[in-house]
Length: 606
Image (cartoon, rainbow, N blue to C red; front, side, top):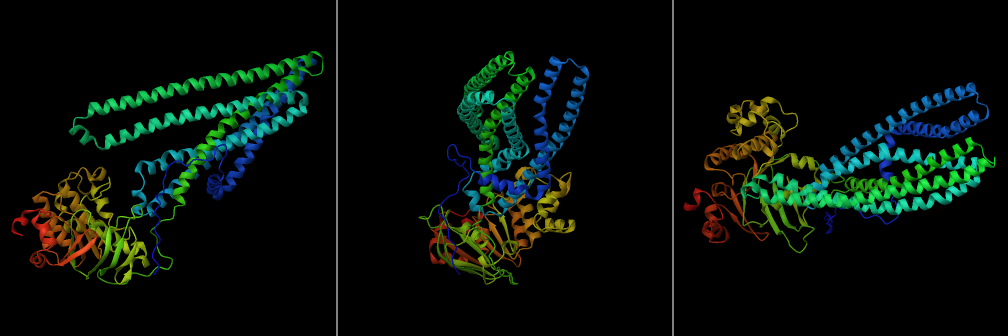
């Protein structure tokens, strides 16, 4: 079998840097593909947008007629007729605005919901190594802030861009129809203002990003402090942390004031530029009215169209920044969606044969892609017979946990192979392989639901009686019933409402319910007191019955009762045998025992 190719590069979720002055469209096309299933609603919303925006161009015409009618004839009947027509146009426009706003907002919410589901589903398929190369906060940011930016793009910015685009093009066309001379003058004045808006706007956006970065640094520190509050209080660092937070907040405040000054100047200059442009048009247009080259209504309509065009240009310029942010956010999200999992089901998977958990490591070598010069495993060959318990021992960093991770295929071997029931694990479906293996770790991971939910996590569709029987076998039933809510007791985040021994027994019950062929015990009793250890050991003995077991342990009692002990040193298998045989060898294992690598009362009699 061809060996998988490992990339030594470490992908990053850092913000991509777009080429200056260029808007990347690829992420937007990918985003628009998510609108595909709802294209009927999208086109209805688009038609409603064009109609409502087109009707908006009627206002200046109504104003012109109102002025001319009032000045020329003074006829109230014509003015009333014009007003009723205008009211009818308003009502029709309001109806189309409602349709456009509702459907665009619906699309924004639905696309974001679909995007969240797809991104989270993809995250669940990515191997542990992918997460080890990234900060949890970065990943959560993708599902929170970046998705919110995309929601704004689909639900608001896209609609605004189209609406202002229609207003801009329609307004310029009507301006040329009204008065080509004034239009050319207006177009000579507006572009410099727009260019100023774009250049100045970039400065404002840079300052805005600096403020956001400062707040992000502050939030990261707060998250670290809150999650480590016990350590902070144990070392009496509350005053220092409060002062650090205050310093960050004041720094952010200073940057915000700098941003506010630039924003105030920005809006003042823009307002002045637009006002001067309108004043120039009023002066030139007013002279034309005096010379009877224009009517008062014509000048009124022209001024209103000018204001509409200027407003549309300004809105589109400000939307450019929003679109840039949306492109960046979309690209980061699709970086996750387009990520190819290094660990995936084979193209032609082999069905997992029936068996009792035969495991074999054949000349296994492994290096982490990010550290190619530091081999973790070097030519490990180890066979574990069905139902056999093998203890993996060795100093920290010897490769014990990595070996079990290769069996579960959280990583793929660099060379050699790992077989399960005689089949290379890379040829099996991941679900079949992992359903057949259960792990009880040193720090078991419990979710913040109830005791019942945490035990039932071991098997989909487990009945209440099956959950209770698993708890009995794990010696957990008694302490669970002592809780006021019994099996419906909330365990808190990561099980903080339970003691270490209780968490361990709930994890054992979960593993029992999973009914695996192979059991991995990763230092499952190393952090327990004597009483809790005794109860957990009884539960583990029940769990290990008839199952192939790989034990990573620092408790000599667990190691010496194993059918075999495999001693690892610097990623190599040095010794293999039973406790007494290895002690008689006077080798690495004996040295580990004598140097008290193992803990527990048995070490004195070893």
